[in-house]
Amino acid sequence: MRNTRIPIARIIFAFCCMLILPLMLRAEEVKEYIVIRKQGAEKIAIVLDKTIAKGDRESEWAKSLDATIKGGLDYTGLFNLMPAPLNIRNTQDGTINFGAIGSVGSDIYVTGTVSKKSGAPNLDMQVYDITGKPLLNRKYTGTDNQLREIGLRFCADLVELLTGKKSVFGTKIVFVSNRTGAKEIYMCDFDGQNVEQITSTRSISLTPAVSQDGKYLAWTDYTSGGPDLYIKNLATKVTVAVRKQGVCIDPGWVPGTDECATTLSIDGDQEIYLIRPDGKLSRRLTKSKGIDVSPTFSPEGSRMAFVSTREGRPHIFIQDLKSGQVHRLTFSGNYNTQPAWSPVSDKILYSSMQKNGEINIFMINAGGSGLLQLTSGTKANEYPSWSPDGSMIVFSSNRQGKRKLFVMNSDGTNQRPLLQMDGEQQQPSWSIIK
Amino acid sequence: MTNVTPKARFLYIPALLLLGACCCDKEVVTAPPPPPPPPPAAPAAVVVAPLSDVFYDFNRSELTASTQSQLKTNATWLSANANKKVILEGHCDERGTNEYNMALGERRAQSAKEYLVNLGVDPARLKTVSFGEEKPFDSGHGEEAWAKNRRVHFVEE
Image (tube, rainbow over all chains, first blue to last red; front, side):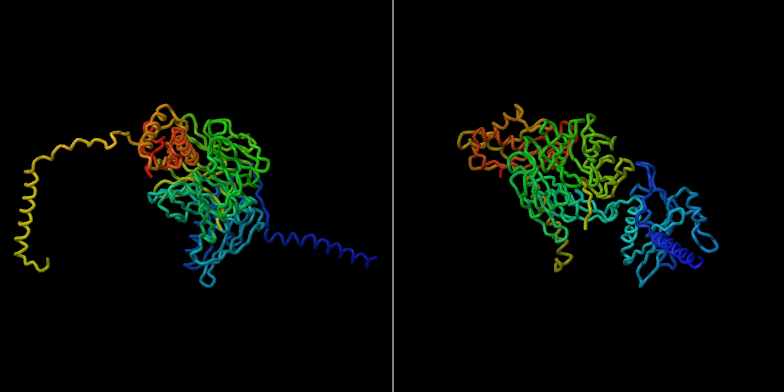
């Protein structure tokens, strides 16, 4: 009897081990950990500890990385960042005192160490929950002039880990500025850093729009004397001009395709057409008397929101691309333009000229419900554009006098300037750029 | 100048001053310029009013009565200058949004062109281009400026 019992016990033990082992492996790094929050509930509380460094060079790196990581996480508006409490490390053995994290009301503890490997920074980041369970343990490397990229790569991983969604880090914003006296296209990082001038035509360059995959930039330019469309392949830098009789204005890209829609008047009336990246006409989308302009597409690319005067004053309409069926989206206000369809949901932003003369940004569901006013109190808040992850909105506003770019969270909170730059800035378009 | 001795320079400067003074005197002395001659009689004996801008109501591309009357005047100029081509530039005021105004500016230019063609002007002589609100005539902010900016501007090609 005894002899038979032992193998059974062993089998049970082995079975238990098989069950436990994957759990132990998972404990090393949890790939998907999403902080459960109520919709619109408070921010995720994070204790962000200073990066540990030995040596002068490393300490300099740590200072720069800390500023980038804190600035980056703060910018998203998702987090409530707290400094580490004094008793975060046990004085005797330097281990983390997880009780201290929970006691300050935080859900998450972030710590890191920067060291020097062959002269270059090597950042080791760890993220824990309040029970001490490691959620992320990752190395970030690069040259010492890539500290910002290194820090932002960690920020991107942390946002994805805690929200389960892509982040704004690494994305770009293209826009128009008259800094040089002429309107030219510029590009900057998601947070307004690294401004770069894209066009130098000394003409009028307007309405830049980058395709959702970051491959192409389209814009309108007056180099030839009239408004023509230009499409630039951002990888090869090859630009094609789309010159047509009449206007060629305000392009919008169709997700999941290489085609962009733009307003042409080759048939007399201003209608929306699809254009291939080689500049060839693909097909005509609208057919109505009056202006059809400013196309923007649903995330799956099957529906288009646009401005039309087919019923008199400018309003936002939605057209199903397959069936061609059109319905009117906006009924309040009598001058609604500049629609922007969320890249991740059925929410549409637009700007509306109000009776008091102000232009403000509104959000509405594609079905017509849930109308929400996001801005107020200044002459013009215009041209909303979603961040590629749908968490933020960039727009132009003259609330401080000249027209400048501002960002806000997608619920309208946390409105603040994007960048400091001479002249006026307008027509921002936020996207991924490879 | 490097070869000029200090003494020579000493003489040279007053000489220049004297010369200058003489010139000034001369100008003062001359009789006032004759009144401009009367404008010569027009060769064809027809005086045609010059091309002039036409104006629009806010967010409108339809022609008002005064717009139509100015377009008739412009049509007369076009028939008197049958070899000239013109560009009709459609413009908007700063209100509203830039992209929409780009389309509206074109509709203004198109409506003006259509009217002129109906008056018998060869459409091949009329080119339209929209500048939206990008090139205001008056950079002010107020109805007075806006009214001047909602226009179709005629430019000889």
